[in-house]
Length: 114
Length: 117
Picture 1 (cartoon, one colour):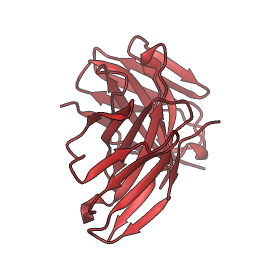
Picture 2 (cartoon, helix red, strand yellow):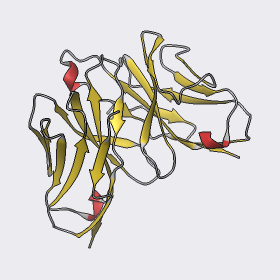
Picture 3 (cartoon, chains in turn brown, red):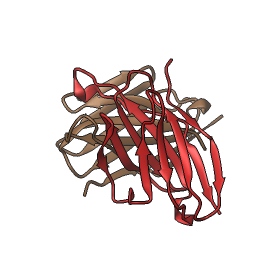
């Protein structure tokens, strides 16, 4: 059974710091990996999607990398802002068809302080 | 920007009652999903739906659950007889058929919080 682990579970940083969130998975047969943001009591906002053939993907201050061989993905947030405070989830999709499910990690709760 | 919409945002029900959670996926999307998140736990897959039938379902999705696409826009999740442990946030998601399937992004709604008393 695929396990997806996110470390750390919680992180507090001062505004302006660069930070890295980690996602580890046990099965390398992934099709793609999505990073999501979840605000308290709210839905999931897709941030980045990395295809299995890619090594990284960038959107603004966010950069996500993927290393299938080691079973790891990282989300790098540059110049963090208080508005970045949220829970960040990684989720992967296996190559089992077009309607295949996402398997989620436990999340990292990020707080960016002033 | 198109979005997945879910109603109601919060549903309170008594144990044993039937509930229907409603979702309007993004127009022209072809694949539909339900996930749930029990408070403090991971987001878990329930069921996927394509071409008017279930594509995949998890072990959570037992006979008490059903899904339906009654018309061209709505996608519903019915829980026939709710239990206390069904209390969770339920998320609907949809995705388009992309020529490159690896780019297939799932878009999520804001969720329905179900409270079973």
